[in-house]
Amino acid sequence: MSAPTVAHIGVAVPDLAAAAFYRDVLGVEPGPPETADGATIVPIPLGDVTVEFVHAPGHTYGSLAVFVRERSALFAGDNVMGTGTSVINPGEGEIALFLQTMEKFMRYDPAVICPGQGPVVTAPRAKLQELVRHRREREAQIVELLRQGPKSVDDLFRTIYQGLDARLGHLARNQILSHLAKLENEGHVSASGERFTCLHRS
Image: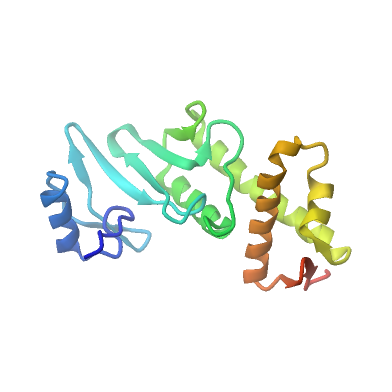
């Protein structure tokens, strides 16, 4: 028997099964089920706080975050870094899911974000908006370059990441690949061999 999928605590798990899991396995008494973002939330009281486990795919497909209601604190995992942005590697996560997760985090309106790495984020909305803006701008940059003609990942890399430390080249190429995968899934780009073509020139 596979373990329950925990998303907002209990998504894809019948309410009674989720409640039994937290009661019997975790040893805590869940609160009454609630609904948000189309998912089931089973709040878990722990001492004087209530926590929610939030399904947060993006950096990886299985990423989770934890929201502490009484503190309005979001433990965001590696989707959010205290400094800079997280990597999204093809096959491990997806840009589209990452953007959806950032929107989900903003709906929680946290007072503080405890990131997977780096300093605590004390201006959460500005940080989340910055992460979304960065991905949107990178996507727009890739599209604009492809409108000039078909290009390989290396072609895009040489233009976008000029002067980057060579040790980071693999990670940078993976970010380009992840953006291209999103664009291809959305019908904006097609691939032929190692070259990518923009399907909309205007």
